[in-house]
Length: 267
Image (cartoon, rainbow, N blue to C red):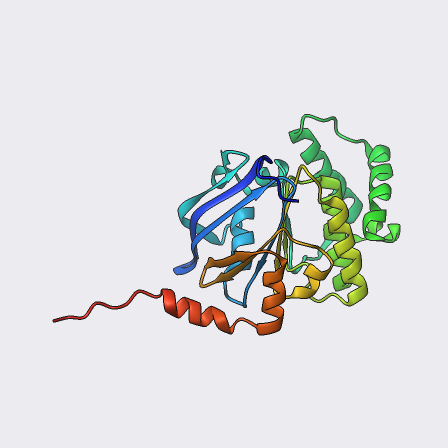
């Protein structure tokens, strides 16, 4: 939902980042306001997943230039856990299994850390179990998964549903979903997309990172951004995603070539 006067939640200005000595992001500009859903699309290697990891504070990536403001404050000064506590959420493309860490206890500790940051009382075990069982309906998840190790033995779809369950409990202001549709069959995709739609609201923003149009058939974005060579090359509405589905990314190469600097001739 586009509202020009909505609060500004995330403002990325000329962001550059590298991993080891390899530049990946080369001048990303992006603004998210409350109530908006943005989709970032692009080929493998375009920088879209790197963008999500840099925003979350992944230690393998170094920001070399630019700025990121989160609700007017410098996001890059915050440790990853502080970013999460203040309402920035990253849903992983490949959620990891952590043996020995109970899923229910993990969710309770994470939820209470977020509540403490918001100035709310922590939930005791019984109150939290009531809350989590209510939120299970968002992702149509069997309560038995709560008693297992975190993502341990979960299928790809179950892992993604568990990510959206975390999102439902944490109630982030900015949710970044990195290729949430990856590896999902159509039924799991519908459930995950339905959960995202339920959780999107006028006070938060969602950033979807995806390769494919099929996710956007189920979650309607306000803006679609095409990334290439570490920056956003073009921005449009949902029609841009349909154009990509129809015509592919060949036009990206032509546009990058057209924007490349012309070498100076030496007399």
